[in-house]
Image (cartoon, rainbow, N blue to C red):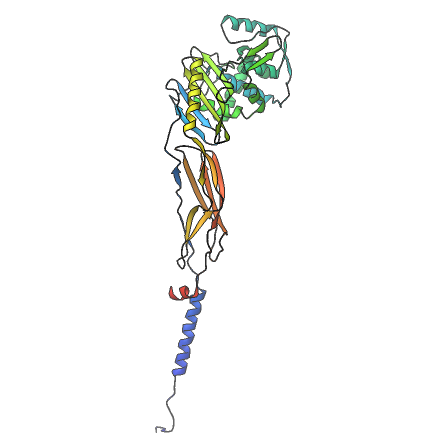
Length: 402
């Protein structure tokens, strides 16, 4: 029988409470859920040219190359196959001697006694019209004096004396020269003698440039090749064959001439660029005469003034990338210092970006990565920082973005 005294059960508060619980749980989940990671877009070009491409003025005859410390090779001309290099060979001779018997500034090295065979060899070279200096049996010269005679007046007989002193025989020394060339990466070079009188001593401008830049890192070698004259006991004062020393900033390093090789010159020069001293190296091979090699070198050096400069390639506050969080405005990633580098017109500025793992919120000025800036041989690594605050996702965004 129906009980007219009981009222129907009211489930509304329970349902509303349950719905409120579910909604609350959903809101909590929205608030606690993860948000998308910031998306970074690099906005600065990975590679961009620094002005119009230009070429240094190099000779049409023979083959040549020119480089600047900090930039590397900036121009080359002529065929790249190996050719006779004449007395440029003596650069390697001196390099091997100084590597095996290092000298410090102010040191003269061991005293070497010259023999009747050395005297006879000088007379033979004299008859062959080779570049040489007088030698007498019993004469005593230091390692430094022999190197000076080798590199300044370019004495072929001094090359053989040093070779025999170092390796007991010329052939053994030539093996050392070739081994050293391979070690340095001079893959297109072959030495047949220590003086370069042999036309079988061959190389390329690129290989000789590599050697010249390496040899000039030795302070003793550098101090010798810049001498305009030198006094040798038993010989007297002799002048450098390199007539460009002191001209157009030239500070070395070696001339060479034979009928087969033509006029050759390996040169180093210091140039003023915007108040900065810049080191320039070059190789000129196969010119008609030695004076022609000098002229070609002066022309090449003068042509650098039109394209060589120190330039600001990155400015303070330069935007490099942009970070987008989806819930706020994009924020720039910038560098907080300017970068000035030596440039040659037409060279590329290249940049690469390295990002740390980061999430919002972060404050303006926080470092979030690095940017690597490269021009030629110059590289800079700069902190990448936030230009503005990077806010976290707000309550409204979390509730309205599923």
